[in-house]
Amino acid sequence: MYSTMARPTPVSSSSKISQQSMRNEHWMFDDAMNERIRSTHVPDGRVVDVTPVLQVTRNVLSHIIPNINLSMNGHIDASDDQTNLSAVDGAHDALHKICCELSCMCSRGGDAHATTMAIFNMLSSYSWGAKVVLTLAAFAVNFGEFWLIAQLCTSNSLAKSVALLKQPDILEHSQTLKSHFDALSKLINAMVDVTKCIVELTELPSKYISIDEQPFSTAMAHIHTATYWIISSVVACTRQITGLIGLRHEFPISTSEAWELSSLAHKVSSIHEHLRSRLRLCYARIDEKKLMEAFEHFKRTIETPQVDNLMILQNIFGKEKNLLNPDRAEAYINVLRRKHVLLLISDLDISQEEIRVLEDVYKERGSSGLNYEIIWLPIVDRTTWNNGYQEKFSTLQSIMSWYTVSHHVAIEPAVIKYIREEWGFVKKPIAVTLNPQGKVLSPNALNMMWIWGNSAFPFSSEKEESFWKAEPWTLDLLVGRVEPNLPTWVSQQKVVCFYGGVKMEWIESFTTATKGVANALDIGIEMVYVGKKNARERVKKITGLIKEKELSHAWEDDNVWFFWNLLESMLY
Image (cartoon, rainbow, N blue to C red):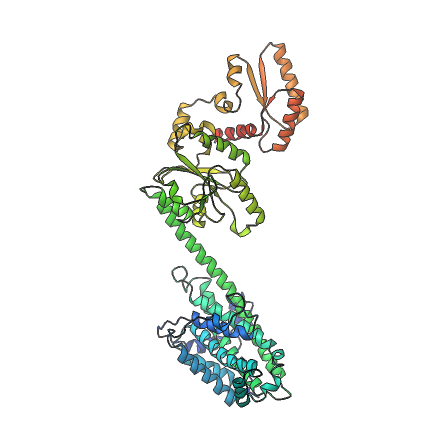
């Protein structure tokens, strides 16, 4: 019925060698064809907002092809489309010209490749994104008119009359046409996907990614090829629709026509796969630069003297109600303005013992007349977040008596990057102290809080250093807060032995032998079992046996944890 589409020259062998990383070379052209397409591109600087045109085009096609890939959800009615194209510069004139070119090609049986290049020349002054959107829109006009008449001709007298004049045989076949649209639907879906990719690529922010930068440069190097195959596919689809309009009883869809549509669908789908992968890399690169920009901004802010701490806190949490106060009510960040603030930073594995011990220090601040608040900042992986993590997050929130973030994504990624790189957070919880002006007094105050409690307020690095210069390393410093009997034992001049381990047989042997030696030498001795770090369940079991057999004194869970944590803090 029409001449077959002229096939552009395939990629040369030398080009293939230089593009070995490309898996989908069947849609690529040689240098001569690439140059021929590029020579038609003579932009005049005009900027056409193609977004509303693409929106209406996708709406039209969605009525015909229900499973078309749309950004919006659900069925689209005519009343849903509020887009106004009157302000889109030159769009209607260009659409009309493309529609005419496609109609003329079909009526005269023109060469598909020549028609494709004619449309390229017609749109020479437009951007690559505008070329594909306007061509796809022109196809949607023709296809939409055809399908509208096909849908209404059996129920609307006007549509029936138009069908009799324009599409004489469509009435007889109106109920069976859909079965012939499989190949056409696949191609149109792929065309819409690639068009969206081209528009996205041309609208990427130049502030964060340039045309000379990978992976953007690779994607843009093939955008003219992708544009060619979209326009060429529109020509092929229009010919197919024209064939349906000229429908006869036998309805011949030739094997060559079906193969052409299938081949084009395969090419265009491959192009979409390539462009989509490039886009993902581009977005990752843009996100990386935005993150770095936000990181540098936060770094400058926190390292610049401020009037108060509000700007620092807003940079961390934002201006919305991203906090829950100790009563679990939503709170604005400005309630912490000009207060000493401790940023408790941890992941979801912070231990309940750690929370309970910190709570003791926190509650004592009132009786000491100290005015500081604690905010919990959970550092989590957003990409792996699930219901289990949410439950754990909520549980930890419920047992904390201080401020917490209202949701796990309340902390900006740039702030998390700063916390890791500048404050050295990895896994072990830290508490960063900010004074009322937002100045960082210590990158981690937990060590001094465990050792000296509220007496170390305002928990600054200078205060910690002065304590160590004045404080001798004594047994009282290490265990005075967890062993209330220590002063009595010392006044009685007893030997005090702290021991650990998780082997019950050794513990029985050790305590029996030690007591025996002390008795033989007439030495007063007290023994205290301090367990072992990170062996909570085993220590709990052994503590019960020690008490049952009256082998020695033994601490409860929180005191065991606190002893080992305090020892580590002192060594640190």
